Image (tube, rainbow, N blue to C red; front, side, top):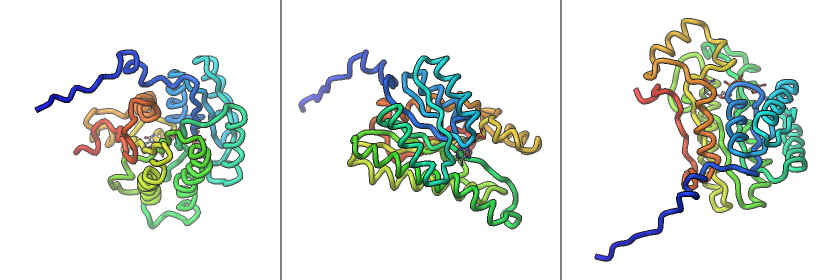
Length: 265
Ligand SMILES: NC(=O)c1ccc[n+]([C@@H]2O[C@H](COP(=O)([O-])OP(=O)(O)OC[C@H]3O[C@@H](n4cnc5c(N)ncnc54)[C@H](O)[C@@H]3O)[C@@H](O)[C@H]2O)c1
């Protein structure tokens, strides 16, 4: 039998797999929490960053923090991800000021916790507008430009609650499950254009979003997480850099769970 020996990539190529020098990354909800940490992580690997947030002040602060600390360019753009005109304007502004977008991270979001029968329709709609509509609108706007340039990677921030159920989060869990499915469909549609689409499903991470949880909820989460603690926002940096870079070149349509072992049980 003939032994098949394929050439291995050079050591320099392997070490440089996470290099994002000169790439442009657009991250929504990047003024706070996970988005801010992921923006910083992508910038530290060389990407120029568009910080998109509906809160202009925190977007500006985050852009200053990134450009001062990492030396890459950072642009603050105010936009509500659920508004079609905001999304189109933000995309055009980033294209104009930073150039073609290589990396899109759909991260903006919020949560409301209570039993389903206590939700108003407006509360239900607000969750689906930011998570599902916002992800759809940015995937469509930036996806068009990625198709034209025949490259790009999209990372949608879902949640473990898009994969498994828990009480008191029905609209949020349904929206996150929709993001997991939207990601898979888009991965199929975009593959032939050289674009990869994946989601990240975080478990419980300590951010302004989860600090709103009542102390008994936080205690229960800590007790039931195998690693015995909440995650930290910086622990999303490795996963997002991995999915944004050459290191994950054969991964598309997947959902990367980052939850301290919570869903393994
Ligand atoms: N923290 C967790 O444990 C956790 C777990 C799973 C998933 N997530 C998801 O991660 C994402 C980020 O959450 P976080 O914990 O960092 O929350 P966060 O509250 O710290 O940050 C959310 C950011 O999104 C922005 N935002 C909200 N609605 C927006 C809109 N309509 N348009 C533009 N910007 C908007 C906010 O201004 C804020 O800067 C969310 O999608 C959330 O559902 C978080």
